[in-house]
Image (tube, rainbow, N blue to C red; front, side, top):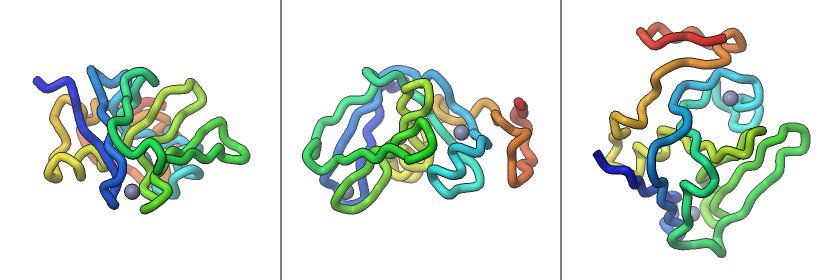
Length: 134
Ligand SMILES: [Zn+2]
Ligand SMILES: [Zn+2]
């Protein structure tokens, strides 16, 4: 089982490596994710800060502190792709879809969601077999 995963942005200037196992992997239905990323829910892997390293394109990476949320978006200045965001706990949250996009369209099984969380705040129902946590 690989314990390193590459991600990067659409223009190719940035490249990052995720190492080890994520702290969390799941579908987050919280309001904050929705406000930050304009998506009905956020399919995430969450990592400790030291698990993510920048291999290329440090100069192209900018961050934006959201004005009302305790969250930052970290993105490529050249193409605008969000590489990850931070949450209130300081974890680095990487979209499962970005990882899949950079791995031939396939999300490694060991990074796939094992639950839904903040499901009480959902704006869409999801009919799957995963546990739904409030
Ligand atoms: Zn880019
Ligand atoms: Zn969330």
